[in-house]
Length: 114
Image (cartoon, rainbow, N blue to C red; front, side):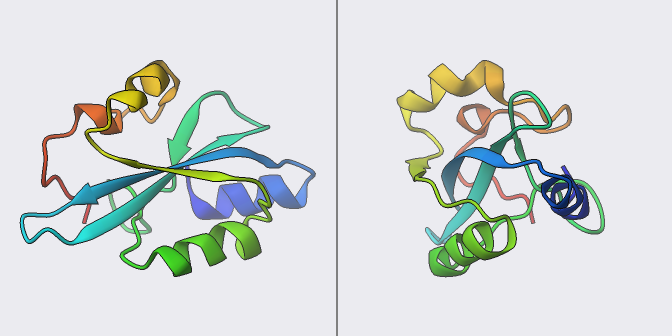
């Protein structure tokens, strides 16, 4: 999902209904956070795409990610944080709908979207 599309949908009365944040770790052990959104205008969970190219947008600073979700996307609800290899993500597997992106639990350790 493009960030501009999300902003337009929210401006037209749409809303973010749920957020799952997946923590991915690079080979250096640094965490990157990828939020997956369930939105009223589409089915399933989807991440925000990168501006120029394929992949998903990620944040290295969790505080900035929370600020983006709260302030820019107007989502006041809870955000659940999972490690990419968390077995609990399996129950959401069929909900991840980004055609070109595997579900977070399918990614090898150290995968990066950058």
